Image 1: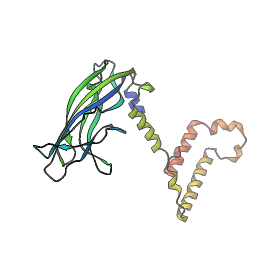
Image 2: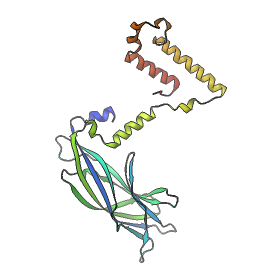
Image 3: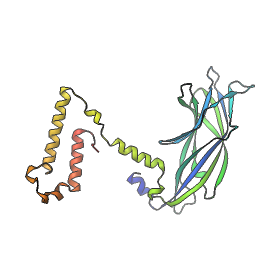
Image 4: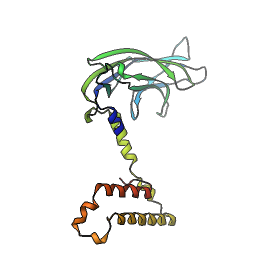
Length: 256
């Protein structure tokens, strides 16, 4: 979680819910053309999180060959956990949208979105366990689809309550975003695998610049070798951080 987002959540209440999305019937009408889906699937996603259903056959109706359905005779559901937030003086949670997507599943297994809708989970998170039956009118994301709807049930169970700034109340999406941010800060060592003469010369020049920077901070000063009194200066957080930032600007990547 970023510092700014953490500041925005100071004084707010958090509630962690488990949601269960159950499927009943999907209706999809194709545009007039040669394309017709063979297998369809459902996904629910937010940021880096995505949960997908199994693939199911799309069966055209007798009256309209461009309109077909998928009926779940065997129950199938997707479960996920997310955190809702609200101001301590507010009566309802803040908006938190997840996207429900109808996907065409190609013969090679690739899943292609063809219709979707945003669902605001603040309307379905309740203190007491609850179930809500919905018919979602999907928005086509492909010209091949003219109309789509999905009959589902949203069930919610409150798992835990606490302060929004508590570490264990952060949503999984926020933690994954933070982890991805740290991964992006790590330099790619493969960028230094250039064995050409020009690449070797650039590395030598970079090493010399880093050495000069280190010397200016007293880190590689031979006069201080073995002198324990210089350790607080060498490892002073401000100087080390400045050295790292300056070195990163020279190398144009972060080394940790």
